[in-house]
Image (cartoon, rainbow, N blue to C red):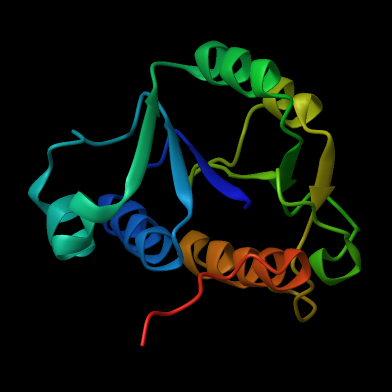
Length: 156
């Protein structure tokens, strides 16, 4: 099943929203530190509500630690970026993909961009810069889960 990776997130509410979504979809979240807010911040807890305890959250002290773990696991890194021309809907996802989202304020540095195995974008109307990072994560993760047949099976 694809995982989400958050590169040094800036906004606790967005991070909480993505952690909540991941908990509901049984997806792991890799949080690459440092974050732009204290990880114990009440806004993060409020946004994630009681889903934080159900989330599979893996913290990495920095980019190097994340990359070491990712490469050891043999996982492909797929970067969501506005600096790509490949629409996410034309990309073939694999169950072992790690979907990387950058900072709300600055995306990812060039070295991180260059480390990605693939770079995808969400097509938008002319003149529009970007979507909210949590909205972007939901759109692309939904497509990745659909393509790989890894949506969780609800219990009845």
